[in-house]
Amino acid sequence: MNAGGVPLVEVVMESDNPPPPSFRIGMDEDWMVEWRRCKDDDPEWPVIQSDVSTDPFPFLMSTRNGWYIEPDPLHSLARRLIPPTASILILTLLIHTMEPGLVNIGVLSEAIAGSYRIGPLDYPKLLVVALPIFLLPIVSRMVANLRDIRRQNAYIASPLDSPEISLANEGNGIKIVRLVMPLEVMARRARIQVGIAVPERSKVLEALSRDEGGQPAPGMSTQLPERRITTGEELGTGVGEATPMPIAHPRVLLLEPMRVREAGEWVDFKGGETSYYLKGPEDLWPGSIYSAVIAVHWELVIEAIRDDGTKMKWVRPLKMPPREGLEHIPTLPVRSGRTELST
Image (cartoon, rainbow, N blue to C red):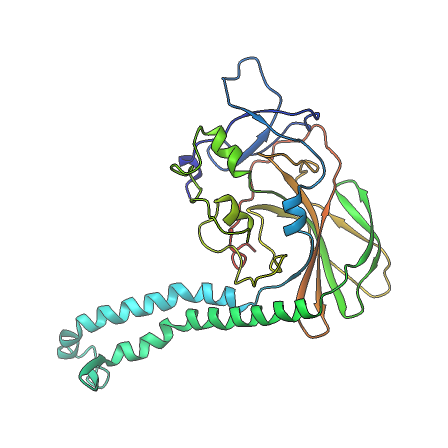
């Protein structure tokens, strides 16, 4: 989507709680998030009532807290196979339309020209070869979904306990003072990351003077009537699936990517060490802020592998202190809403 073609959502937020320190990430002509105090020359923007807190909202605690299964790598492979396989199919159809001329001038051999007759129908030889190649992404995605479903069912049958962990905030990062993983899981590495959650749909519509049931706001789809699956589907800001196929379970077991996310470096867990320091992103981001329009969310991510070979992630929200005097971050790190493309 072209960020320059989408209008900025600008509101005045009223809350009983004190506002966080001012910050700005991104540029006006690109994706941008800004929180500042009102000025005397500001226009008459809509006034939004919202709680402002440093504690994560319930929907984040229910969707970004606990153990998650790493999606099958075939999802990413299937996504990368789509452009070349579609190109091969289109090229094959183009060659088939020019087949007689190409055979006459000797560019195409008669051995691969023509068709196979099966029953009353003729099937071009080139398409017989190209069609299975074109179906590779579909078959790969089907196999990956079946594997994900099997892993999710296995986890539901034998869930994991949360690790025992003690943390301490230190500057632009955290220190893991103590970490005890469940017996059947081995931790490999960890990092902290920060992102901005999707705004509440009702508040965005209110800011743009739109009514639910009418034309959706730019970047939003029609609200779905079904129960909550992922953040983007519930709020109508994602078109299509954000995660691979989840099964019916009170808690989603596949971690949905944050649309805006920046992360610190991975730190490997080494034998014998008892504490680890996880540094945040190079740019100094705001501390934890939660409101209906802007929510800056910090979290700890630990990659681990289960004894049956299943790759897992353990995610825990972090409460980072407010930070004064933040410098302008020139680029808002917007990422894909699909799990297999977000990295």
